[in-house]
Image 1 (cartoon, rainbow, N blue to C red):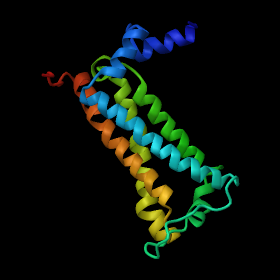
Image 2 (image 1 turned 90 degrees about the vertical axis):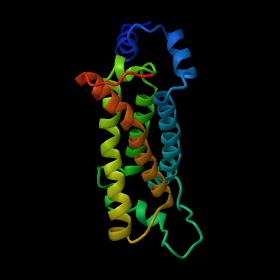
Image 3 (image 1 turned 180 degrees about the horizontal axis):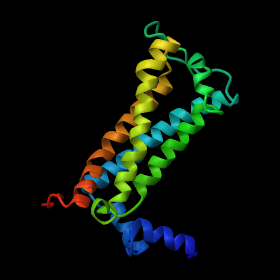
Length: 188
């Protein structure tokens, strides 16, 4: 094991041996671990959605298919080729992939009881996912309906995954904050 790997392991899981960490992560049925698995699932859905958008934004795919309905007005090509979508110095699809990847890594990090043993991890997960959800809300409730006057189903799915991620990490973050302030409730 390299010193960097050892330092990362210590920061994320303390002195929990890898075999025990594997057993805990894979088998723990507590609500915190179930929520972390759900974060993984919704983040992977978001990655799939934004992978398609990224292929379009990078020119690999020339057209994004939309649902065959007249209302609401779907036009994924228009939504994903706006100045806003390229306003970060690069397409926003790959940036969103990175955001989901961070959520995946944070969901996987640490033992099941990390709200008590590594409270900084759930607090970081909330600090990372909250602005993602806020940006998703801006796109979903302002950018697409008011500015673009068109909808992108891939972007709608992506926004919903960001909302779900924040909702799933929030309870563990609250428990971590309670632990840090000494107001943590005893588990039964």
